[in-house]
Image (tube, rainbow, N blue to C red):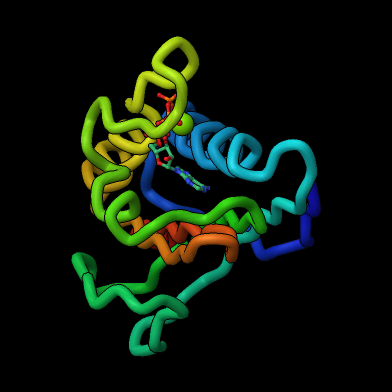
Amino acid sequence: MVHHSTPEVPVRADPAQLDQVVMNLVTNAKHASLPSGTISVHTDLIPIGMARPCPCQVRRHPGPLGLLMVEDDGTGMEPEVAARIFEPFFSTRDSTTGTGLGLATVSDIVERSGGHVCVTSAVGKGAVFRVFLPADL
Ligand SMILES: Nc1ncnc2c1ncn2[C@@H]1O[C@H](COP(=O)(O)OP(=O)(O)OP(=O)(O)O)[C@@H](O)[C@H]1O
Ligand SMILES: [Mg+2]
């Protein structure tokens, strides 16, 4: 796991819920990268008016945003899988190990906090999850 040094950005969200978000994203990245790979976690501040570093056009919040990015170089996903990952109980893992609730929980927490999650991935190219939350500056 690579842990870059990244800026601290205050956001309006429950700390225990944010722990859950990070844990779920990093655990998924680990499963996609087994037996070995590189996972990187970093944060950033996206000021008002700055183009966000993702293809997703969603902008639910007009102000500055805190970005949490979890990136892996694991298996990646087919577009058909990527389209369904936020559905409750959707899992490509063995039913004894994955409940498919991890990312449903992540998107629920993030959206209730006024933010959104964006994912980019391709088979064999890993995955990048970006969580945007309203910054509390
Ligand atoms: N980093 C990733 N790389 C590749 N596929 C991923 C990644 N993260 C999630 N996925 C895909 O999204 C699916 C849903 O993820 P989610 O976290 O919701 O459930 P799960 O990990 O299968 O089970 P749970 O988190 O409930 O233990 C996974 O089964 C997997 O197919
Ligand atoms: Mg999971």
